[in-house]
Length: 90
Image 1 (cartoon, rainbow, N blue to C red):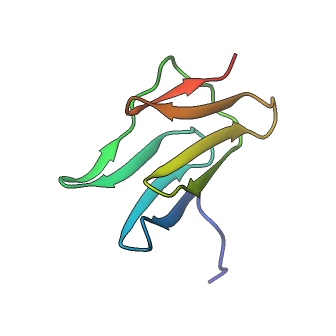
Image 2: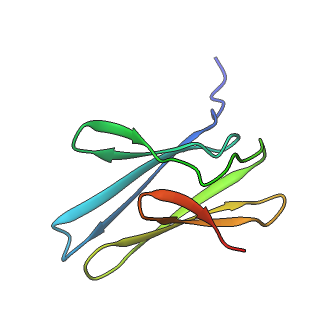
């Protein structure tokens, strides 16, 4: 059986002196994303619908928290998580 990659990726970052962490799961084709929260996987809402494309997510740990971005690697559109949802940079 071939070892083919599927559309899902997981990004992890620790912060606050490595005592806390953030885990984001995302679909590289649809852009859909989930954060691991107190209730398990919680879907991150979208500001508006995003088309199927090729998405990458990055997390940057900060002193007291974290910052995440998502980029459509084909069009260059970019989002960050603002108030618990993806918001596009315009």
